Length: 540
Image (cartoon, rainbow, N blue to C red; front, side, top):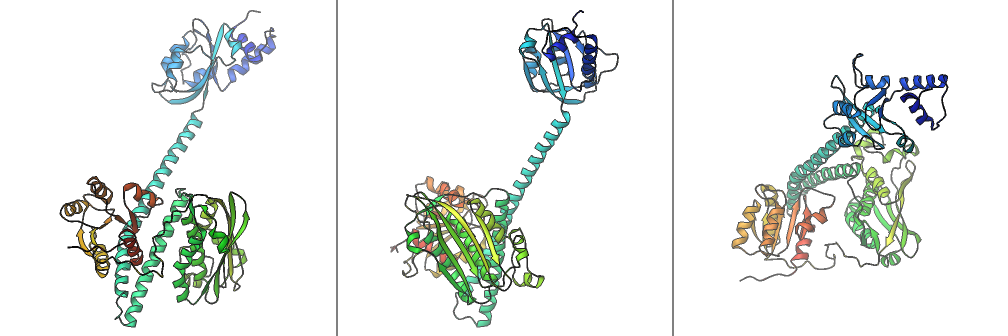
């Protein structure tokens, strides 16, 4: 029996050189014609197409009378390959090489199809054959789905970027007026001659504004975590310093509500350890838990406990617990409390114990990001206990303290007479800032833009610059760059209402000495001024 391209192809598929019976040949030809892949059999030397199957014609949407046999395989490629197809050069000029890859084609009706192309599919056996094969598998549906996924991913990324920009802008726009409200409240509260009812109203105004600020911070933190843009930074720190700062922060609030805040930890052992981890994130978790405990505890106490669970030469596992004598949580709600925006108490209690329902969600995510898990034990009217364990590496590097605080028992440093340039475009915020500086007996000049600040620096000497970052004409970053280019090395503290994850790094890389977030605490601002301008200077 004379060998034909079909029988030759059969022998390639079977890998045998034996003669096929007519029945087997007929069966093979039926399979060949019924294949969902388009096959082209062409001469290995002349490249003339000897045979195609039915799918080859339907793939390119050819009319019944149009034949591909007799054309060269390169002609088919030239005729139907899309001009922007991947791998065009290979399919036009290296058609005889063993290869598999992607290509795009245009059919007779100019419909674009996406194909997986396979040439000389049987490798070494095909090399010795008089005929070669080219197979095209239509994967347009798969490619379309893949493109849809790509488009959806781009759309999601754009939406996430827009969301991040919106939240950042919202944060800035809300923090700026809040700075005015809280700053004005602090100025009024500094007046000892106020009547008690006025003081009460001002305290309410300040508390309400700070509550709005807490909500903004929670939403921003949740957004960063949800977008996977919050990072855990490993730096050496002392846990005792971390706990002391948190307890000092909460002590006045607990005192006002007459709730005892108790700490229990192996102070001496912890003082000897330098941990490698993210002190700010750990502080945030503990603060969230202490704030939550204070909110739901009407009488009694809240205890913060730290214990060493496991210690070896290079790492330590620490156990943290915050327990209270508060109203408790029903057992069936224990899992629900960690869900975003969840408030598990009755409607009356929701209104009484206000909040976003994000604090515990943020705490859970942060603990997990730091390599731990958080749990809860609670019963109604029997109090609540939150606990988590975190692993830390032990660091041999000395701790570079980020604290700007002066010890409470130290007298305030003398900063009277310091010459300060305030660069702030918002008139309300500028006036509030200047009011505190005047109270501290400083000499002040004001600028409303970066350009204005540069002009004042030409004619006046300053010991300190307090500069807003977002200003018209020239922002704080550019203004500082111009200042440093003039060789001026005095401290420049950035004022910003935009809270970013890597704020420390951003302001330091930009050349700022430090930064203060709006709304600012007068005590924090003063301590930073004392830190960078430690002595009083007498001026002629």
